[in-house]
Image 1 (cartoon, rainbow, N blue to C red):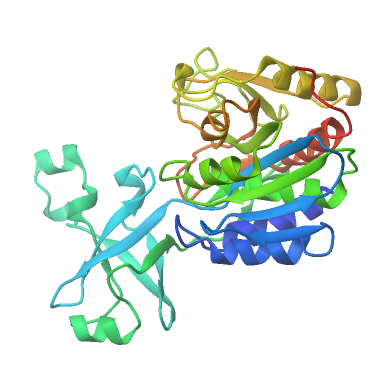
Image 2 (image 1 turned 180 degrees about the vertical axis):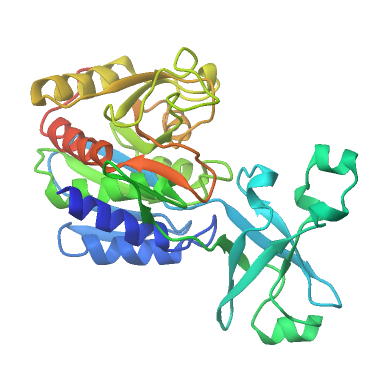
Length: 348
């Protein structure tokens, strides 16, 4: 199973799909699930909704398909491209990266440039390069040459990075946030046997405001929901386990609170449902009371008068970067946990 999960994640991570341009991920989802669900559709927002029919009790599983990226804002007379960010970027992460521009004539390789460090004064070096001071160089010498490549205002941009193996069953790549969640949902739907009706929703535009989760939860109106995502571990230099008591390789993470309560405050019944399934199956788990970001569950649980929800996360180092790191065993155990839990029902 681990090889299957890893291979699927490689395929998903190496694909490209910034917020609002998730079509390539949707295509993978439809290929993987087309023959093992009762219905698969794409709504007006672009959410892919795969359904396995069962009883009246409806469970929504959500995983956002989008990755953080960039978009062309303007092209100057010398062919240099200015851009805006889509999602949360730390500027030094972007500086001097190679990117892919997804133009009307196909993929175009570019480089994120800025003022060379050799020409920065001491104060500039301390401040670092800001996003607004960066540009993209595709080798064009004029606005017209860049346009001839199929690049225009609004062209989406992603980082040019493929998955690579590390030691001890760990791998590194871009967009593990949240292609890990997408992989978990695909493998769960391929294996699950449940008395319930299950909606696996591959949501859009999470990185820019949890938008697809909000609209799809309203439409589906499930009895409960689980979002699948990644979370930050506290197991490497620069961060401390006393502040983030989650470790990579120690099992999937069940959320109790997100963003110090500004996001999801999980249903205790949902937390117990997953915890009981883990205990009965011998699956290692961790719990999180987080102070950082939010997940799709933060939007889902506020719909329709309230939907009991929680998040099942996988610890991933260096998220929102091109070199995220994950332990494949954690993903495998996340799939096992969902499959086991869905055999039963939460008690509200």
